[in-house]
Image (cartoon, rainbow, N blue to C red; front, side, top):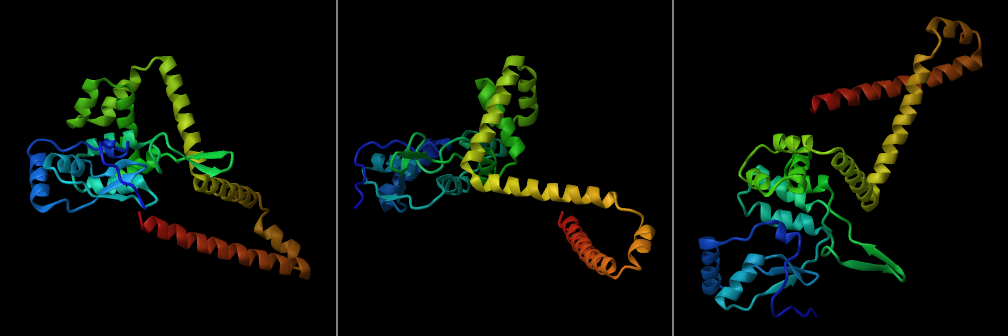
Length: 274
C-alpha cells in the first residue's frame, strides 16, 4: 500500500525542465478541474511530482483532493519528454535549451537519490547523456552542445535571446571565442569527464565501441595484407603444379571472393538508403 503525500510536494528535476503554465491557461485548468474533477493522475517518483505539476497546483486552487499514481516505468526522462513535448508548442531553441539542462540529470530517481545494490555497495542512478537528451527532445546533438555552451558560459541576456530565437550556433561560437586559455582547458576537462561518466553509465556503449575497434583492426590488417599480395601471375605459377597448394588457394580465394561480393552488396544498399 502506497502512502501518498497530503501536503506540499516538491517537483522532480526532470519535470522542472519544462515551464509551468500561468495566466488564463492556468485559470482554465482550475475551472475544468473544479467542474469535471481531475481526469489524469499526478505521477510520483521518489515522493516528487514527475508529471502533473500543473494539475497539482490547479487541484489546490480548485479545492479538489489530488489523485496520485506512482511511476512504474524504467526511463523517467523519456516519459517526461513524451508527456511534455506534445503538450507545448516549443520552438527548436526551447527544446535545445531543455535538452542541455536535461543532460547530466539522474534518470532513475531524483538528483541525489541512490539505491542499494547489495550490502556495502551503493549504485547511483545513471545520468541522461547529451546525445540521449537531444534524441528525446528531437533536436540535433550539435544544437544541444551550442545550447549548453550558452547556458554554462553565456549571460542571462544571451539565454533570453536564445529562447527568443537567436541563432544558437553563432552565439555559442562567439562565447567560445572569448574563452581564456584557462577556460578552454577547463572546458576540455569537463568534456573528458562527461565522456568518461557517460561510458561508465552505459556499459552497452562501451561494448559496442570495443567491438567496432576490434572489427576495424581486423579489417585494417586484412587490407594491408591484401595490398601486399604478390602478382597473380606469380601465384598461379607457384600453385598450379602443386595439388595441396592449389586446393588451399582455391578454397581461400572462394571465401575471399564471397566476402567481397557480400561487402559490395551491403555497401551499395547502405549508399542507397542515404
